Length: 184
View 1: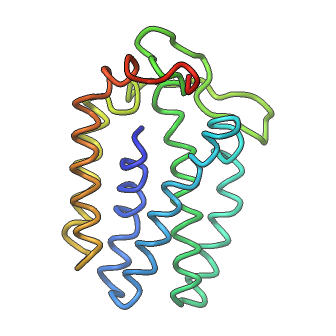
View 2: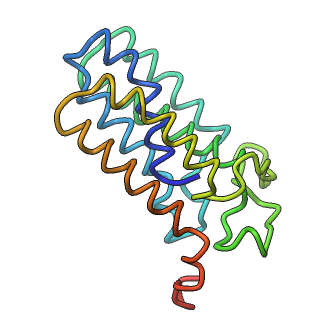
């Protein structure tokens, strides 16, 4: 899935909480945005293995949510939003395709690494590849709560992310031809 779809997933998850406690809206949104992006920092290492924790991530997310529920504050809610969204990012990568640049040509049998079992999870391909039409549709649907609940710069950022998502989806298949060899 696109990075923006991961971010919109996190924003959609925290939007109901932000609606009920708007004073924590910015902290929740920042945690969700960073949590949606953080796992893909492993692009520089072993992508979908180094910072993706589809099973073990729940062991971090659940206690973070519990702490935020018992001691709600900007910091605890931001950490909980980060942990939940990072975990959801890793889990949702298994419903898509593999991490290859051209999944329509070279279909990998590796979606995301499960550190608990020590093996790769197979891609489900419900979303065939990042930037696929179904990814764009999902991203648009998940952006709606953010656009309705948050205010100010967060709405502008969500709208900008939505525009980038749609542009990327329109160009995605052409990007492989434009990618330098050293990046593959």
